Image (cartoon, rainbow, N blue to C red; front, side):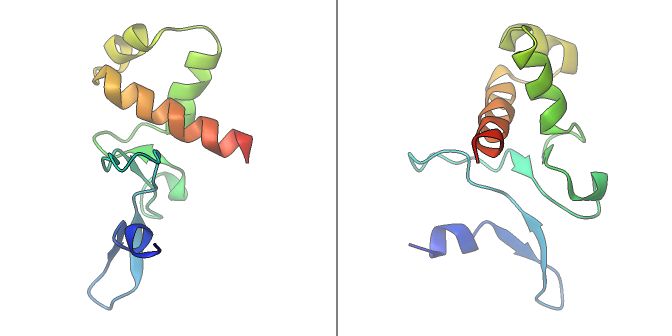
Length: 94
């Protein structure tokens, strides 16, 4: 059970954890869309395909922007926008 979480941790040459791709779904179809890396944005969650913080995307969505508008504004796929929103929703619920 814990192995699915451990395989989402990337390690450096010394074997220390350097990056984390958090799980955003329980259905097993977890793409490595969200990245937590202390060397980017001081460890704040970002979209792995960009340097865009997931909180920025989610804040605009919760303010009323649609996923299509956000995808166009940030030049990313709508599925990536949805992953950012899903991740931030989980954080805010915790």
